[in-house]
Image (cartoon, rainbow, N blue to C red; front, side, top):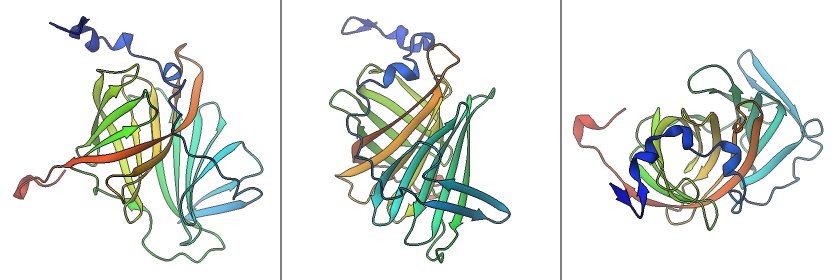
Length: 251
């Protein structure tokens, strides 16, 4: 069976799928401008006995302004580890995501640490795991050539489909984690099993017709050895929402 001359069986041969570093050229066309608001700042983030310290003057980083006083910071200080920081300087809340290359399946592991920020009185709801995206179907456009559909299935699984770009026709269901940062603003992270990579995105769903995201992909390049890390952004819109009846409504 063919579709426009393409053998559909080829899509199931995952050995031919595009490597992570093959996606990067042009994929970041809709990335937001970075900001230097945090230049020279240092932060100590605490969660119980756990502490994470970060200084904007030590490691190279990119910072994005998501909302008033809400920043997304992406840094890749070590070969096998990348950090994503969410800093809410108005509410004294934070979230640290550590993405690590390992020998597991999926190859990338992610940990999530909700925290408070030293020196800023914490108030409002902590950044916490959320199931608010379940049932939504969204379109995300990363450039004039790259577009993907996301279907949020459960707290652990989502399905993606490439609608435009070099991965057009490919689709899969992968692990995900979702945290609510503020009302309508979420951290959405995923870990792919075919391509050794993981992503962390901050997605603003407050306006269903004008959604916005900021993110980073981290993983292993085509040679199977070299870590690959790059940031991107997307414009999105809600396509539909599925509401499950009665006792089917749940993970």
